[in-house]
Image: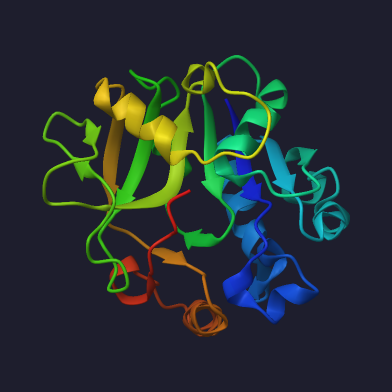
Length: 236
């Protein structure tokens, strides 16, 4: 199974840090954010990676190269202008192959063990959900007792930005800029999205302040729990 790291965002909330450095290359405890993802994926045996990029994307390619330094094999999907999550994944489908694939948002930090993700989700997608952080108390989706994710009901959890998707989720899509959320909600309505609740470390590194706090906690060897540090990802 291959994995994709989403790295094409402009990182407006991280300015001025992202004026000259792409957000995935910002560092916490001496390592770039994207390095943490690559190392975690490789540890789980997911060594075939696709990384999309737009803003200052050449810096990402220069920093990571072919991925050998981190034990990975990386291919790139250059977008020029960011295509949003849905459009970015759709553009990269030829690189990801015909089977299910993992997608990770590049603007989070997590200690989630990627090896526990299902290699073949029963439906079209499998989402990792986390406790609602203080900045996003209303959450995004509901995880039922049957393991299915829905867009209605209570209590709600927050989408972590980690998921497994089948290419069929994008059936009927056309090239260009479009969000992922409507595709997920349509699949949820058909009972085709499963999920799990992760209670470990998760941070949306969305502001310079959160990056500085993550840097401090990792440098001190402290755990960074989503209940302490997270803020909601803006659902694509």
